[in-house]
Every structure is written in C-alpha cells, then in structure tokens.
Image (cartoon, rainbow, N blue to C red; front, top):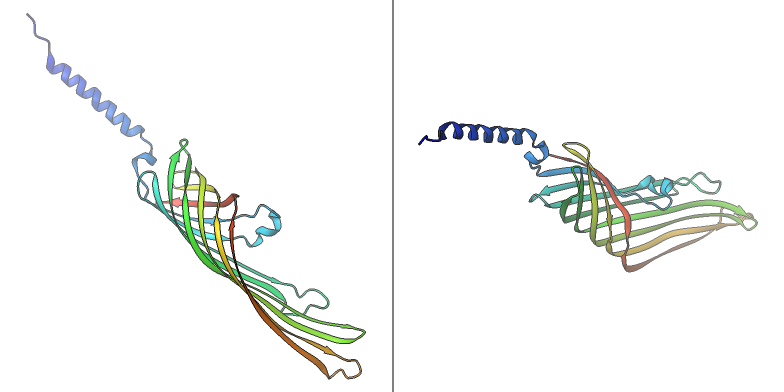
Length: 243
C-alpha cells in the first residue's frame, strides 16, 4: 500500500496560508491598522435666522476629544464670543456710543460612535457646561429743540451666568486619514440668571441762560432667572484633526 506524501502537502498548505496572511495585512487600510486616541479642532455655531447679519459675531470654540474605546470618547469644548459696534455715525449721537458684548462657556461631555460607511460616522451623546457673559450698551447724545439744548449719557449693563445640559446628535465626514468635518444638532436645556443695571444723567439747558443746566441722574437694577429648552437643527459645525 502506498503512503500519502504528507510533507509536501503540509508545506503547500503553510505557503498558501502565509500568502493569504500577507495579502490581508497589505490590504488592511491604515485607519483600521492604527487607533487614533486624540482629536483637536475648531467649531462655530451658525445662526440660521438672518444668516448674513447675525453670523458676523457667531460663537467660535476649541474642541478636544479623547478616544476611550473604539466607539466611545470623552470630549471637552471651550466656546467664546465677542462683539463690538460703534454707533456714533448719526447727527445727535456722540463718540462713546456703542454696544460691547462677550461670553465664555465651557463644556464636558461623553459620546458614542457608529460607522455608517467608510468615511461617514454617526455619533451621539450629551454635554454639561456653564459660563458667563456681559453686554454693555452706552448712548451719548446731544440735541436741540425749542426748549433748549439737551445732553444725555446712559449705560445699560447685563451680566449673565448660565448652566446648560446639551444632548446632541451628529455626523462626521472623514476627509482623509487625519482630517474630518462634522455637524451637530442638539436640544439644549439652559438656565440663565441675569442682572441688568443702568446708570446715566440727563441735562437740560435754556437758551436764555445756556450756562445753566438742570442736571438729573438716575440708576437702577433688576434680576431675573429663566429656564429654556430649544431644538437647534444645526447647532455646531467644525473641523477636527486626529493624531
């Protein structure tokens, strides 16, 4: 009885397995061969209503994400906004008139990811954050009428402190190995506490005695708290870089 040649068959099977393994390693994309742990990016929050005017001072921010597992990550955001306008281009409006506003918010959150294709990813999660802001509006005016000359200088200051819980849902579009664009929709629940104060003076003169003015000063302050919830179809757009 003849014997089956096992040694040549084993060598052939081993070579075939080795060739398949090498081919699989060569064909594996770089994205699956390496797990990126960090993402850093920039964000903006566009305003859809009055798009070309309201977005001149839209909030912008810094974004960082730390990948904890293949589909979960911790994220941090810092958002800021600054606005400055000068309205001293009218006849009775004097230099010093304008509006100045700033706001700073910080967020920490958690997200889950689900791939929808080779370059598209669905993600969702929630953030909590808090911050503060200030808005100052000042009006300086001089004018005349039949009763005499007038001048007025009044300032309104609004200070705001807020806390927010923000569930979100987003899509990430991979541009290449490292860069990606993303867009988010959210339902933020916000509690804001505002303190509004005003102070100013009003002077009225007389044509018969222009050097004599009636001087009146006034001031006041009000406080209010407000809880709100909103649906923001496009709350956040951004670009990130992973490494």
